[in-house]
Image (tube, rainbow, N blue to C red; front, side, top):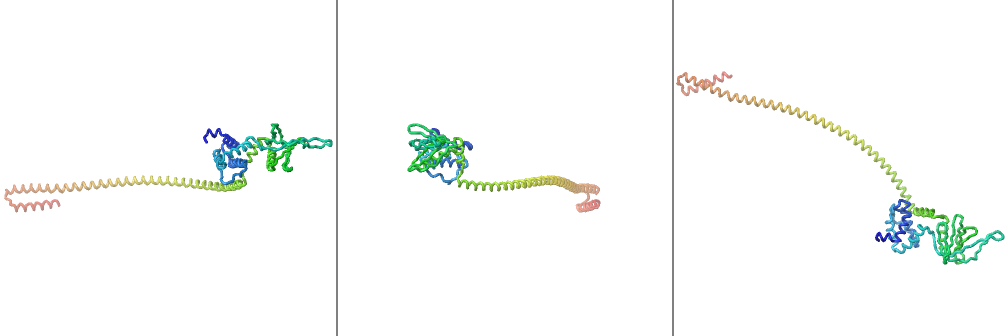
Length: 359
């Protein structure tokens, strides 16, 4: 069904009015599960069908769309749903408590000479339409003539009694005026009496609407048992939740203390690492200074050794020069008469002299 078809559909409008009647008293958008079941039971009761068993749990807040889905499952025949919806709509929206065809007649009472009431029951029975509303019973003959009976707290509604094949009951609205009703079906007679008493107990529409709302919120006995069990479970869970909350609070306190101690230890560790880093830098600096000194000493030793080697290399060359000079001087004095053997002996003697002088 499209949106336009749903808006123009009379059945959809009536169902929405019924749903809104109870939803407006809660939060304006959803009904309670008990209210949804109450409406469905009223629809089934109008078709003389068994009310819905408590098989599945409804959600806490029933939307109108969910309510329509339930009706489609329970009432597969649209015609049956339309008939029952019209009757329930009259009951809760138009506040028509009951209606139907009955036999009725007005009985007048007159005072006799002995000052007692005498009822005139010679009037004939009239076949007509009876409609019961809060505080009013409307009667209408087939020719269009209407009667209206005001019902208040002083009105007396007598229970039905058998009178041959008929079942008769009376409404005494005043000492002078009494209405008698008759129906061939005793069950229908009892239903009429029940509706008339309801009209007396709730004699205006506001009071009847409050009564209907309280009925819709009334849970089934099984639901009440389940509700009590759920309340016990709720209390138990609340106690456990409170204990868990306290335990979590204690854990948070311990965790906070542990975090603070850990933070302090981390700060101390960072300080110690900083001290170690500074000491290590100082140690590296001192080791570097010592290494520099050692390098300087080593360089100095190497330079001294290198100078000694130069001296050792230079000294023999000077000796050679002196030796050559002495040799040439000796040779010049000896008038060049020196042989090779004498020259060799002279060099040996010269070397011995030089080595002796150096020692």
